[in-house]
Amino acid sequence: MWTRTVTPRFGDIDGLRHINNCMLPIWFETAREPFFRLFHPRLDLDEEWRLIMARISVEFVSQMRLGADIEIRTLVKKLGRSSVTLYQEAWQDGVLGARGEAVVVHYDFRAKKSLPLPDGIRAELEKHQIEEGDSRARSGRFAKERNPV
Image 1 (spheres, one colour):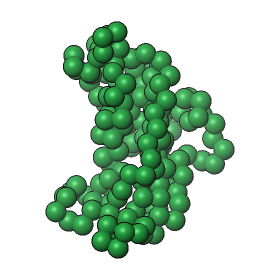
Image 2 (image 1 turned 135 degrees about the horizontal axis):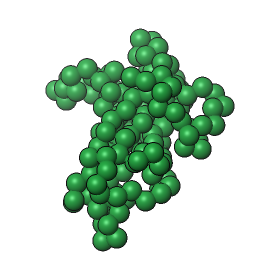
Image 3 (image 1 turned 30 degrees about the horizontal axis):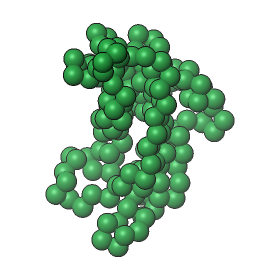
Image 4 (image 1 turned 90 degrees about the vertical axis):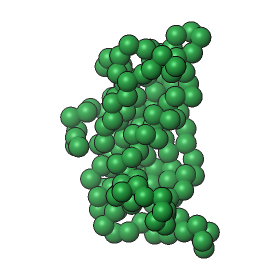
């Protein structure tokens, strides 16, 4: 599991003083940085970038607020031939605030087609993978102490 802590800013709240719903996709993307670095260690956009986002989803579970850090947890839910489904959760003060998924495809932009995941990267991703049938992630009870990074 990869973790990233986000400190909400005043501008991240809405008129109801809750974290604005548009912040979660941004924070989830920020927390995917270790995943991106597996493919591009320096995050150098001058090199040939080989990842494309196919889908994202966010489910809002409970209200989050200004004044307390939010921990984003990222795991690998599914490995395909050329795609990876990442599962993410946002926790504040021990309470699950949101969860989401992102499907990222290893992609050749010039040829406009997907590429198989490289074996070395696949092996590293497997270290962060949720076991098949593990319902803790779907229920928002995925423990931080499991496979920490």
